[in-house]
Length: 292
Length: 303
Image (cartoon, rainbow over the protein chains, first blue to last red):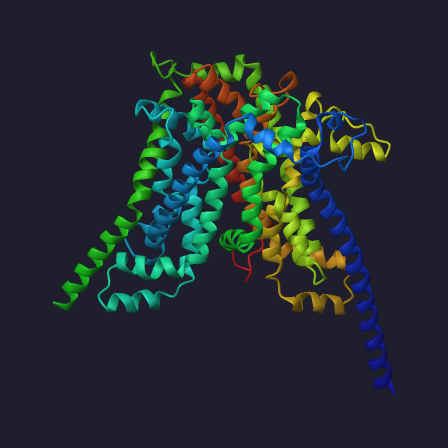
């Protein structure tokens, strides 16, 4: 009798938990859905504004649905400034930076993760601590250095440093290398393989997912870099998309339809990349949090 | 004999190790350590890149602290931004990841939607927000008007420029969210089940289990966003055409430093400024590290 009552009580208790959980899930879902609309609305607004006529842009109150979709705004925007030149320039820099970042950081990270040498921990601590230095502290003297090297108004200051490792990427790739068992490396060493061979033949292929993450982060960084080109590039023929967009803003002043079309075009490659390679973006974040 | 060969191998391996990290060593000397030393030395001079480099003692630093009103303005603006943006983005990211850390339909899609803005950056995003915040025909004030709220002039009103930038920052809260979500997904389900049996409600579970378990990530997030927050530059530069906005309300520390270094070419002065920023960031990080053992829980009870 007592046992039965206790049992019944337990079941009803369980039921209330279930019920509460369901109610919470619904509230949760509604909050997330509302928030999603909020998060996406700026992008929707950008798209809508980009296809409005200038007259409609200035109409009050503005609308979330355009009277007509003037896709020709995009052609006009593209022709209003040398965007094709900017795209080629940006791609040149971005591709070189990605190549440098992927190979050089992988090489360095392998050394820190898999080759024992004296002072390795101290040096790695220095790598990590450089992440704490505010960028402007080194930016100003670097500018002086590049000026003395006659590198101003070239892409060298934007590209060359990518071939000498970056603390964040070294950290990320080392994290990933740490998950590869040492036995694998040891076995190859027993066969008489050098570390360089092991890195090239085993390390690179095994770390492909992490390299994809580094490639995507580097692409994003180089594609969106505004400060670097602003500081080092003067000739209009060398302008990047970010710089070009900033100049375009000055020319267009408040012609928001063209400005939004230009912005969307510049953001589009990143948005596309995001939808295709979301998993690598997320992996980068996970590697970061695993390493705190 | 065998011992000797082993020793040789170790030495050889060690040399290989240095070869692997050689690119970093060169990069560190040429692009970090060298520039740091130069900058420190030059902060005591009147260096201007071209003609002069005379030792002026501490006068750059003295001038900054006693005679430069804009230095204090830029420091105030930056502190204001950090003081609001860091707690808001941290709390926002934690709450959002808690909402996303549930087994309900559409979760993957939600995660994608919230993360998307965080990967977008650069001039395109700043232009978008300038349009969103247009006082008359922008989206933000249009929506506020639906609720009978007369929106402010945002980027044209010195009282609202910094809140505007903080709102923009909040749009990219999804980056931090993913960091927390990864950590929350690592928390054992059995902890929550046990708490539920004991009658703990969702809020209690959140504050007693979730929060303590993710404190290492909170710590990491606060340290990095503090360092990042002090360096706000690009958005202020683009949105104010490099000038610092109405009544210098967007003149952040780095923007002022930029003007001094690359517009006035008062390099010695700018480098002195950069070292003050370095000291502030360094001190805050040390404080964070010292405070960490008091509130950061590492699994296993150790440090």
